[in-house]
Image 1 (cartoon, helix red, strand yellow):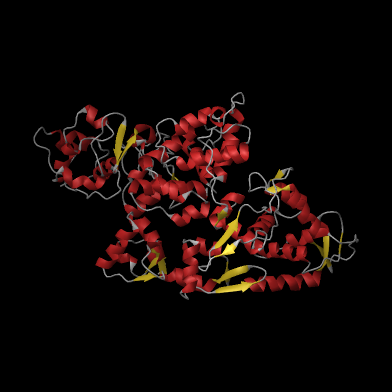
Image 2 (cartoon, rainbow, N blue to C red):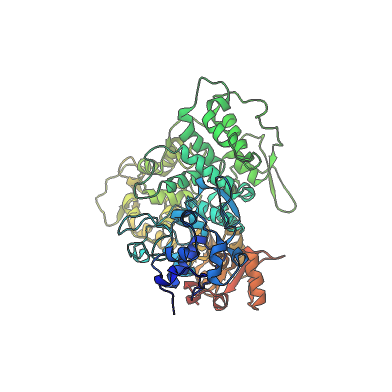
Length: 628
């Protein structure tokens, strides 16, 4: 018989609860107490805390003493070690898992909740006690902190894991999407740091985060960086419907993105306007930033990469302050690999590779192992020219090409840029003018009397032709004069005139080349793996590629679909199980679950896949197993 509240008023030795759940690794301590109360039919955690003999102060504490609660489960305090340290440390720190974190970084009494996570794993994770845990990277949704019905802030004295004090179940509430990829990646880093699991390096590389530096950084230091960024956030920088911490995460993720370019952009946008130009030195001009990040409590070793980027900003971009000799970067060799080249030019490594492939940047030498070397002392082909930097929309307006098409045109590597815009994501007006000139060159003015047999580029761009890259390839063909306009009906590229029949035939050929193929970005999204793993799947013959002059390397979509239907990555399953990939591999060995290892040598957890038919043996019953 389940205890009722009157039973709890008994002054005798506390009775053991009828239902005594087992705590899970990664579960919030207070969330476990709430889960226990809900399982035993109590309206809140209060009856359990009172029955355990807690004082009023102990009941209000962030971590009620486990020694008094353990007898209710018929266990000793040591049996709850899976929840991490539970004794509140002295001073201003609060334990969370195996970390002692400043109370400034937590909201332990008012933790948020992701209803989808509760539905899948059956408990509230300790992760949601972090103050900046405002969105779920797995379900790409904002976490819930207030009841939509009564508007009260969620705390642990509610009726259930997803049920408010007023009785409203937030699991039924429509979710608010979180779609900022870089911010979600940063949240995923916080989660991995808390749980002690390895970082998702593929995701870090995708958004251009400084992976090695983040790997070496403690959770406390990373939270300290977020706390300091929050102090400098401009007012009204956030959507009123979203928590303030989300704005901080967006700013921090954009600062870390395409490192160090994003960091330099952050300094220019947030701190440069308040720079003290009366000071001569870089540190003096940016004193508030420097004191907060480099002189006020954060470990110098873990912030060395940021300090180096700060000095680089002063030397190469700001150029309005003296650099103290102790700050100045040491002279390094001018011979670098592709990573060093990308950093010197100010682009991502993937962009640098495209510039090399197009022979815009010369190769200094080639190692026998295939690695390329470049000499930075040579004249770089880019110019930091004077002129305006244009947004995507502004460039599209000048070219009379839809913004979505221009974005695809650039992402496919067709866009020829020789002038660096600031930020690099923008378009330099000189490059836009060159492209416009290339498109309309040698075209004579003509009137269009026959709109059946002739079409303008503007009307072609409005047709439904499938992926934007089809139209992007058409634009590139016009620039190269693979398809030749018969004239122009105005002064802009959109006024170019083409023979309708020739356009139809040319577009049909382009669309045919895309049939049953998918881009590498599409494969990344579908399989949720990185580029290296995709090409390893190609090497092992699991995936096939098609090469054509218009779209580069494409992947056979039927192969991707077949593989996706049969296998799921070890990394994704480890995330669902909230354990490291190596721990999951050991579990598979114990359960004799076969694995597909696509690594050519050695064992890499990132290269391992498990059949969807077998993941139910690991206790997973989600859409992953249903897909089989």
